Structure formats: structure tokens, C-alpha cells
Length: 368
Image: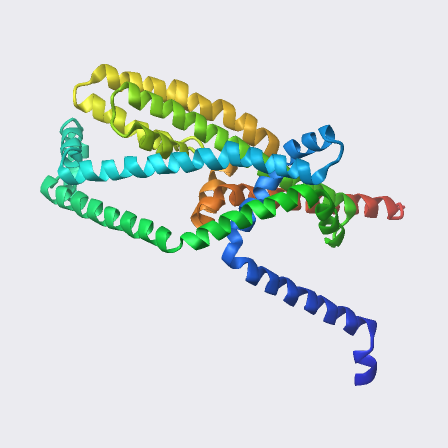
């Protein structure tokens, strides 16, 4: 084949179009990178609240714009305003905690000293071997950590002020995108599915799994986090622990890690109660943490997350931790979605191989 025939052949045209498609797609992703978080959460919000939009759409006789605006108003009232109020209160609680640590009112070295005093001999020797029983050095480390932490918080707050315009633009991009994805999402998803070069049954299965995992992960994890944080904060308030709201939010955030999350906060507090002689408070907090806070994780998470995603708890845990390590806070959604897609794709691949093997066996001539 000569050059002229090659450049006018259908194969060359198809390869050139495919290359153009890849280049244009990568360029489009590149220009979206500055607002990747806003785009991601705009899509997640649209997927999660699509049932609300659909219900309003049926009620208002297919008036798509009105239904999308009403859904967006519900999102602002139910999600945005409460988060804004909570963030403002949380900043005050964090500043008060840092001040108490710097002033010595909250004495972490004294807490560790009391814990070490009740440890068995072998544990004390092990800590001494690693130099963990020098409380003066521990005091210096804690003071240095608090100083660095307060400086980091101040720097972060300052950067938020400097980048307030970027945050506001990203926030409105998120809501703007969510509005149009709600209003035009069904037609857009059909176009995307039609463009994916897979069998129709595979496209449908992957799309359904993708949407199901996102809804289950977001709704399930947020509901579990809010419940565990509220229950933990209520317990801390009852026992008179200062900064109960801050610890509640921390427990809620850590509860994104299945099975172990909230216990990383209430567990050390219960130990502190026990070693300082507040036996009934320590025992009560342990019982409350295991039987109430832990029960929420053991009961609600499998129902809200594991049941819909059809993933085992250990895979949810690993994919959540790995997702957050790679993608930050967005990873608690991205990680389980990638894990679910991994399972679905390999299941489809295995099924296709089994079907192909069965067809080959059926077409093979009988052996004499």
C-alpha cells in the first residue's frame, strides 16, 4: 500500500479520529483540574438527590427547571447552611482547645504519666527502651507539636482568606453544575452510555453499579458519621469533657473508617477515666462506646453501605482508607467506587469467559 492509499484508508481515518478524541478528552480534563473538587461534588450531589428531583418532577408535571431549582434549594437548606454553621462553631472550639493546651490547662504529659504508671512491667520496660517515659521530653514534644499545629491552623485560615475568591467560585460552580446535572442528567447519561464502546448489557450494569455505590457510600457514610458523632458528643457532654462538639465532629470524621473510627477518640478518654480513678465513668464510656456507638457502625453501615454495594466490610474499610490516602477527603467516595467497579468489571470478564467456554464446548464436534 502506497502512502496516498494509506492516508485515505478507513483505518488511518479511524486511528486519526481516535487520537483526536483522546487528545481533546485529555485537554478537557486538564482545563477542569482547577475545579476538579467542585465538579466531583456537583456530580455526586446530582446523583444523590436525583430521586428527590424525580419526585418533584412528577408532582409538577415535568417542569424540569422548577424541579431542579426546588431540589437545589433543598440541598442548600439541608446541607450547605448546617455545614456553614457547624464550621464556624468548630473553628471556635478548635481555637479554645489550642489555647487550653498552650496554657497547660490540658496536660497531656500528666495523662501519659498516669497511664504508664498502671502498665505492667514488661510494657513499662518496652516504653523505656524506646525512650517514651521521659515526660520532660514528652512535654517538649507536645508543646512543639501544639505550636506547629497552631501555626498550621493560622496559615490555613490565612490561606482561606487569601483564596476566598477561589472557594466562592468553586462553590458556585458546584451548585451550578449540580443544577444542570439534575435538570439534564438523564439525557446526558444516555449520551454517555451510548458513547461507551461496550456491550449494551455491560454499559447498563456498570452505570447502575456506579450510581448505586455513590448513593450508598455518600448517604450511608454520612448518616453513620452523623449518628456516631452525635452519640459520642452527647456522651462527652454528659461526662463534662470540654470541647464536646469538636470531639463529636472528630468522631464523625473518623467514623468514615469502618469499625475502628470513633473508638480512636472515645477509647483514650475512657482509659484516662480509668487511670485517674474515675472508674464508673470509664466503664460507662466503654460500655456506651461498644454497645451504642459501635452498634451504629455494626448495624447501620452493612445495611446502608455494604448491602447496596454488595462489598464485604473489609473491602469497604481498605478502599475507604486507600481512597482517602490518595484523593484526600474525596476518597471516602472515590475509593469504594473504584473497588466496586473493580469487582464488577472482573465479574463481567469472568462471566464472558465462562459463556465463551460453554459456547465453544457446545460447538465442538463430539469425540468418537
